[in-house]
Amino acid sequence: MASSKSKTLTTRATNSEYSLRPMIFYVTLWFSLIFGLMFLATLLFDIITTGSGRLDLRIFTEFPSSSPERAGARPAILGSIWVIGTTALITVPLGVASAIHLEEFANKKSRINRFIEINVQNLAAVPSVVYGLLALAFLSALGVGDKNIVIAGAFALSLLILPVVIISTREALRAVPVEIRMGSLALGATPLQTTLRSTLPAAVPGIATGSILALSRALGEAAPLLLLGALVFVSFDPNGFLSGYTTMPIQIFNWTGRPQEEFHVLAAATSVVLMGLLLMMNGLAIFIRNKFQKRY
Amino acid sequence: MTATSSGSGVSLSHSGSALAPKSKRRLEAVVRGGFAVAAGVSVVTTIGIVIALLTPSLEFFREVSVIEFVFGDRWAPRFADASFGVLPLVSATMWTTAIALTFAIPLGLGAAIFLAEYASPRLRKILKPVLELLAGIPTVVYGLFALFFIQSVVIKDIFGWETGTFSVLAAGFVMGVMIIPTIASISEDAMSAVPMSMRQGSAALGANRMQTSLRVVFPAAISGIVAAIILGVSRAVGETMIVAIAAGQQARVVTGLLEQGQTMTGFIASAALGDSRVGSIEYNTLFAVGLLLFVLTLTINFIAISFVRRIRKEY
Image 1 (tube, one colour):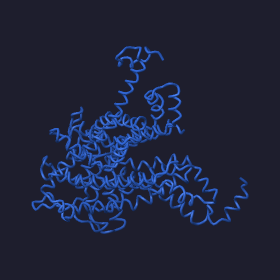
Image 2 (cartoon, chains in turn red, yellow):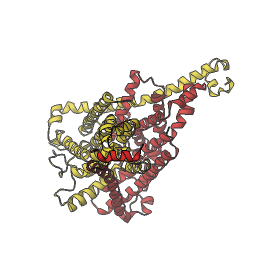
Image 3 (cartoon, helix red, strand yellow):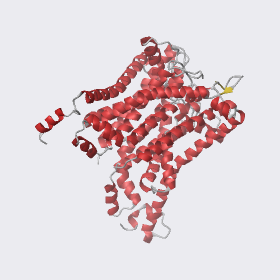
Image 4 (spheres, chains in turn brown, red):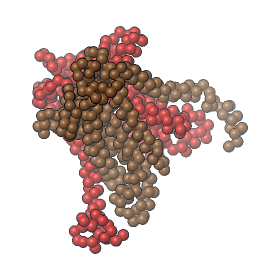
């Protein structure tokens, strides 16, 4: 392109890149982005400064207590780890298998598969409390008296994030170019071999990123567990799938509702710990995405 | 490949190694069947939700008329003089959702256009994950922030507005920021998926970037953008912890930004704290409100899906 000529053309035209309206538009866009980031910074600053008074080892070592000086979030931290670990064991295999079926094998035109597809999209938009109600009704129907057990919480959270795992896995599979599948098939591989040895490995970074993000959503979730009675005083370490538990978000909710200021400080301190954990998970997901994901 | 080297395929064979390819096909069918069953779990979940919500709700509506539930404006399920008009809860949900969208739609779409059309690939690679951090913050933490900072510091101290401990404004605003990344991220994906040739065509016709963004890329990506907004709406309607902490606990019809109000989700969360016996009216009330919430979000979502399907463009 002859640069001098194009320059005169753009400056003469009313729709120049540097006339007033595009500039205002540009600034507005910047503001939209900055607003969210400034909110994030303010939130982090506020929570960290509020929580800093109690951000010490006691959070990790002490059990909840009616006296704020002696209270900690040890069982809540361990409870979160138990529940999320169990959730991962249930939801990742199930979600990846579903996604492989829908993306690779299902006849896209068959009614059943189109129904499943719409269904997954709908489930992703179902509010999290509804999953709590589902788990509550299901466990009541089974006659489970004490619903505040790790496996029940993980069940509710697994159903909650399953659609997210399915959708992100499907996207990851879809991003693998069809030429890779064709190449594999042309070399004589069966459809299943093609999927498991060519398509799936190429999609692993995307799947890992999506799954980690889904699990971090489950880690921060409180509403479904609230319905299963997780808002309890736990003075022991959870030690199995059938163990009673509370989680960090539930503990934060509990302390937020107390009238004493000291408990609000504890809630903020526990929030810092929770967000630290989430940040690590998010960081890992982003690292995997940026490091391993190929752009075809 | 020889039959003996086909490993696990042989073990499933009925008629020996000579038919290995067939056995392999059988194994394939079994594994693929397993995938299909896994996909069926989502359908079972939906059926489970419908049954779980309907059964107690039907019991509820045996005691309370649908008319009283839908049109009644007094919500007092736990009082001796019990009343089951759901309007107060619906009004609070509508206020918080509307406030959230007022902030989230312009800010989310602005951020999306910036990321998709203006940011260099390097800048986008940094900014997008940072913005997505907003979606990663737990909702209890948002609730905590809405109650102790937005409501008591910003609204009360800085603006000096008259309000109580809680307000739908504080909860709605924070909820709006929470859904910015939902709207921004999905819209940005949709706009980035618009082929470069369309932008080049637009530029070749003399359009500047603003015109290209608004008149070419935005319409081309509209299906994804609408989906993003609708997903934002249903997240706002269904969000529980922020409103349970910061919007208030008294169910009264909300008439202003600075009033407190209990949303549908807020009621479910607070009622879960009380010990409701299975089968009692308190227990059934939870599910009736849950059913309403579910039907509402499902309807919103169906509108989105059908809308998206009708105007979807494939490149």
